[in-house]
Image (cartoon, rainbow, N blue to C red; front, side, top):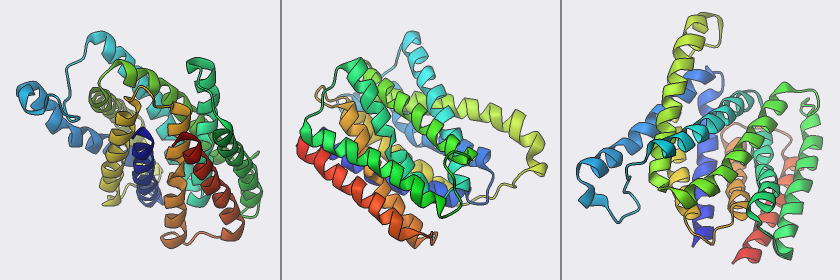
Length: 299
């Protein structure tokens, strides 16, 4: 069941990437990110309030948001800082890079998670799972070759560095998620980490972006900003719930979630008319085959 949930989360994650690209393309990044976390918090606020006011209505369901201790808030706040750092780097990267480049870079994040899962949680992969991982690694090197044809040199492009650092922070967040979901309520973690991100982004918006807003890229409201929050909330809700399964392997879940690149790649072609598709399709094909091997090795 947790594997099916991981694939469902991947679909919404791909839709999230498309909405994110649409929102930040030629737009101010900081306000977009602030509205994203604000709407994510507001979407979960009703069930959080209802869980405290009338706990009997939702208790026993996956929508129940139990109260958490001060110590737990500390763990969740740490997650908020890790995720927010990853998002800030990712949003700036996706603004300046083609979606067909960003998607496969994100697809390498589970490789980092895999190493951590083996070292920290003692997870071990079977033959099919290893084949899937190795295909993903190969796809990254092919991606760097196709990127050069668009004038994007991986070793000398700061936006590529931003994307890689965002992936590294995202991988560490994934490992931390495995710990959190086995210890605390998934819905409580999701609401409060969005709430803390909203507070932090509000501070960044008011004190760093707002005073310099006239000298930087202007902000334009787009309805795709709301879609970011909708798709991300759905993707995270399913993802966190999948990790509550004691048998769930974070290394496999993270890898499957990166199959979202199939959705974001389609968006890059259909909506943004990105170029150099033949070389990238080979990379995409390797990722797709890798996902098949991961599924066969886990099913």
